Length: 406
Figure (cartoon, rainbow, N blue to C red):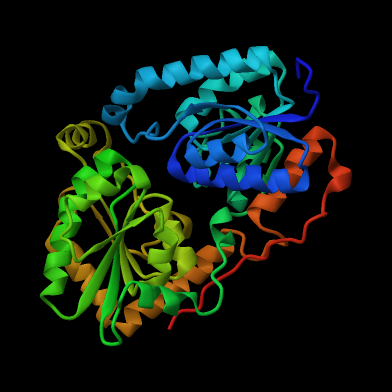
């Protein structure tokens, strides 16, 4: 590193909300083990705060910089280009000892040649298409990175065969430990009566998703309310709380950044497809997964994607390679159909038991039985890259945790 500060420096790059959270946790754990390290980031608010606590630079805010489909890429394209320029300028002036890229394949894979040319070792945490089991898609980056820490065992095997040094570290979503009694305390906080059910409604982490799914899920709540005593909570990121409030009536609680709490406390959940479906698995929350588009996204889906044979969209089903959680997508994402699927989960012990059995299998695929959690194992890989393997194991491993639900 140039200048008078000779501390080891690491650059983190993450785009979407889940990548920001996983990277922030990784940065915090690295700081605990190596308080002298200087961390920098191009990332969201959690990651930005984590690196600034080390005295590092938050290069830019990637909040709302993730996209699904071409129609959602266009509004953020110029901003992403500007963030890329700022990051590269920073690296040229203050080259880090290593860079940790997390997910965000559309952006991060475009930076690989730059980091290679700059001679910066690359650790890819959550590589693109890690969920894919066969084929060559998602493997092009393999020769361009130093190490990979991937959440799935089959991903590590595929990447190793493609010429990459890849390790299965499991998924950090299993690291959210719920202390005994937390579920009951949360249900009291959310004012759930002994004869009431609690349904969590998760409309997504992007403005466009909340705009499309918010009105739909509000109608779902209205339908379910007519069928018996039920309460609802709607967890959303802080920037979207006001927007979400506009769709749901006042008795429905809007929770800022508390998706894990909502899923732990609920009896059933409606979850936008994505990483939140795995949060529901970790929390043991029976779920229905949903997704829909605005008019531009609908046209893109009809033209580019509908004709492709995509068996599953929800991550639990992709991992199991069989249907476990209901998927109500696009034209099937209707309030009446969603409410019917939720009602079945609330009323059928058999349906809930079958889903929990599938969840146990998924948690095994997510690394539940690995010796340490994903964050600690990834820190150890980074230490090896930096030549600090001798400090491995200084922390007690964080054992994976599962939640027992009534």
